Length: 384
Picture 1: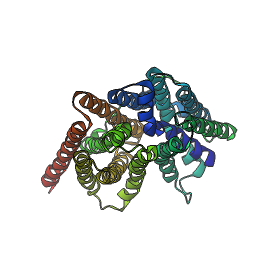
Picture 2 (picture 1 turned 180 degrees about the horizontal axis):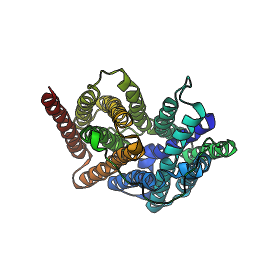
Picture 3 (picture 1 turned 135 degrees about the horizontal axis):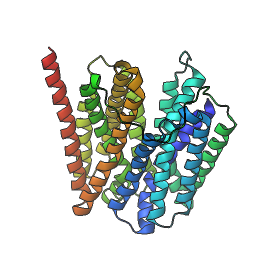
Picture 4 (picture 1 turned 30 degrees about the vertical axis):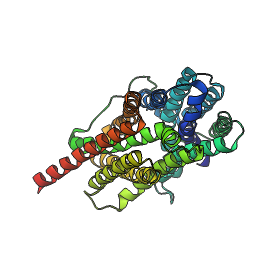
């Protein structure tokens, strides 16, 4: 169980490790903030494509081969970053990272479920959540700390990631196969499916969680730029900390959704996302760090609640034969929202500057969440 969880953790950690290093790469290769958002976004698009093409691969060939492939792709991404001499190499590395994340997510979650069993004291879903979000949170913080302390800030983080991913690959290779069943191998796009019986709830949850993911994407792409150019903070660890807080709180929010009364999770998430957007806009307007940290915290909690509500709705209220496709569709929407708005913000930064772009983006997120909230209010009135 430990080797699978560790493979899940380090693979996801490798996907956020570039975050505090983007300003350094900008100085090294001379690219613009818009380029940073594109480099970030291709990762999310790689995840979406990987989910659609390889989402069922572990059901067909087994969990172990897919976990080995995912961790080896993580090794490859670290090697490409380690040797990168231009933006093209970074884009290749990010696409490889996206495929590694897509492969490990389904295979590791299924393997943990099979190894622990549903009656285990430690729930498989809890371990998977901690490995997934914990990796996303720790990758950026670890890379930031290493970039500050190591003599070679663009090399040392990737050497560490490479070694850890290689250890994970060896661990899952030596581990036994957890799945006793196989289906026929076929390489084809997994069809997207929005369940008709819960379509309105599904779409509202996806829009709210997607808005939160859009903020996570922009924070991941441009936090270093904001801290460096606006606050004149050169600490890469601080960049890593802001993104760490956002992803760690996203994990916590998925636990908190279980404590909320039925019917309140999505309204609470929308209100939280509106508050978070206001805090991030305030950070841009006042050029201060505290609102940014507060906004990252609140956005993470609200995003986690929205994601937890969406997954819970799908798994409890949709037809069993469509649940897998519905979950894949849900996450395809979220990862698309992680990528596309980040590029939009990059375009705005190029046309204006960072602060007005951030303020505009925050207003759009708040408006989207307000629309979802008003839709919930109208639905509640019709029901009553």
